[in-house]
Amino acid sequence: MTLLGPLSLSRETFPALAALCGSLVGAFGSSVSTWITQRRQDRRDLLAKKVFHREQLYSDFISESARVLVDALGNNFKDPNKLITAYALRSRIRLSSSREVLASADAVVKRIINAYSEPNLTPEQIRTRALDGDDPLKEFSEICRAELDSMQSGI
Image (cartoon, rainbow, N blue to C red; front, side, top):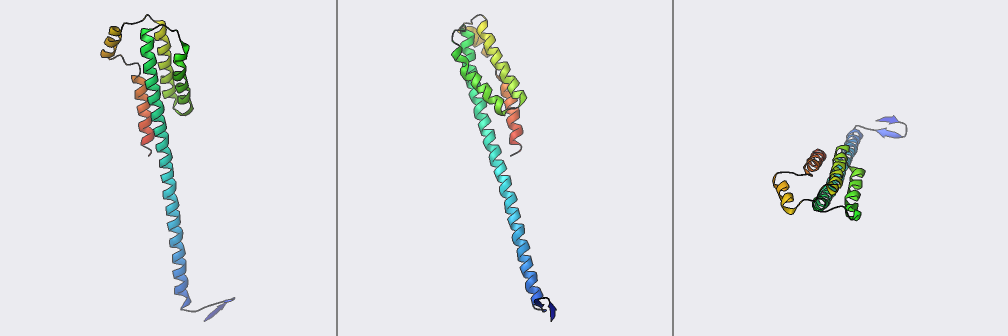
């Protein structure tokens, strides 16, 4: 038996200390592993919420822009209140989206405003344009899809 200060160590004490140290290391490793896993899950959940929020925002902008654009093709600019929702959605896009998405949203709004200043189209002319593949929201949709795809690759 050896005397080390107030502790007395014998051959029987070493295995007990080794077992205790092994248990502490195992518990610490398990705790760190759980913490890392939880942190990654929290990040994935946050990213999934961001993706969902942007999908909703882009969908709302597309719906509102399409509605106002069809109105602009067939009518003169009489009521500026018709543009409020599109402007508000574009400003919300500015808060969270990439510069490419914002630039495309700006182009859509400009196209709507320009459509109000052009001669009115008949319903048949609007239909013909649609059938010929004239899609003023296509570029915006494609840019949004690319952004959402890149975000989802991080999930």
